Amino acid sequence: MEENLKTAAENGDINMISVSLLEDPHLPDRIDHVPFIHTPLHIAASSCHIQFAKKIIRLKPSFARKLNQEGFSPMHPAFHNDQTKVILGFLDTEIELVQSIQDVTIQNETASHIAVKNHKVDSLGFLLGVLHRGYHEDSDIQKRKIINWKDDDGNTVLRVATTMNQRL
Image (cartoon, rainbow, N blue to C red; front, top):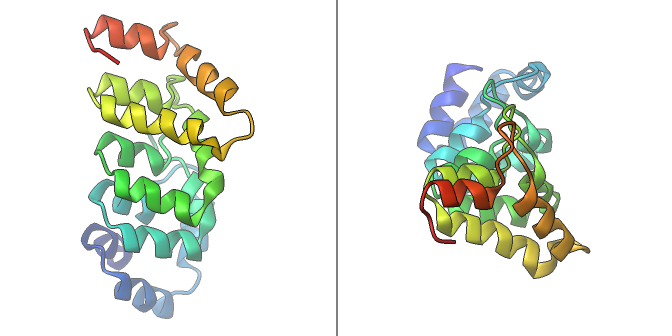
């Protein structure tokens, strides 16, 4: 990824997006063609640069589902870093991202598994709340599916929480 765009994502510099695109209008397409890459959206999501993230999603919606080398979509670092405002910004811009709640890492972990493993019980509550509020037609079925999903070690979210002595 071009250094200017990477720096812009780290700093949340929306104007630098335009400068980068003027210099190289095909840059987002080249980034998107890399199978696994930490995109500017991953960086912005980790750093709570909401406006930058929204602009990148509008310019290149496919970045919202792009997996990095660790198998994480931009939604995952946002949850990992308690960036609730970024997540809500994602959902405002791209309601279909709610499906990301069901995406899994290469270890077959959902965002819920990651939230519990990182002691982010509030994030888990947020995830389940998003499903419960009916962004999905079958929100109760989806919520049960996520809670009962087993990672590669056979652990559900509840088992991980119990193993880590966390109250949900």
